[in-house]
Structure formats: structure tokens, C-alpha cells
Length: 99
Image (tube, rainbow, N blue to C red; front, side, top):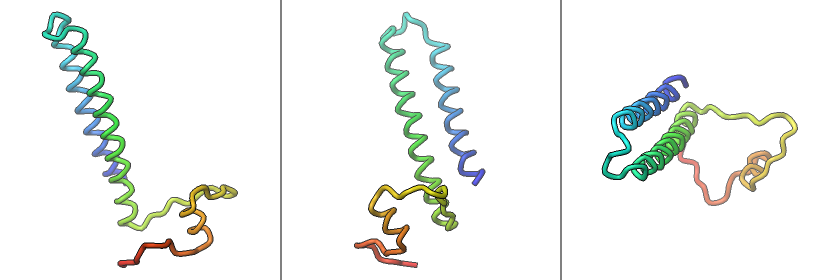
């Protein structure tokens, strides 16, 4: 799954570089002053979180497509009702198997 993580890393580095370029070129005498830097920081936090969430979703879909499963550690108890049903080998209610 190296390709999946490489894409997310490239997008993250591109955003980091763009932010560094903006902060390096703009001074405190810009139109918004220090508030502009705060807005850029908030935009960066939003951008980073979107990369994280989209990357996690893409990785999940990629793993499901390839039918890779994450196996829990030995001795770990299921927490959610769905996890308990999977551990017992039961089919989830309200879902149909398309495959």
C-alpha cells in the first residue's frame, strides 16, 4: 500500500510548502496583519485534517478492495456491537451481500 500513503504525503508536503512560501513572502504590514497569519494557520489546520481524513478513507477503501483485513491483537475484546457480531461470526442486520 505504498502508493496510497505516498499520494497523501505528496499532497501534505505541497500544502506545507505553499504555506511556508506565503508566510515567508508576506509581512506584518499586509492587509490583515497578524490576523491574516491566524487565518492562514486555521486554514492549514483544516487542510491537514482533510488530508488525514481523506487519506484514511482512501486507505480503507483500498484495503477493502484488496480484501485486506486488520486482525486485532490476541486478548482484545470487541467494543462496538458490530465488532461483537463479527467476532461471533454473525451477519450484520440491514446489510446485503453484493459480492
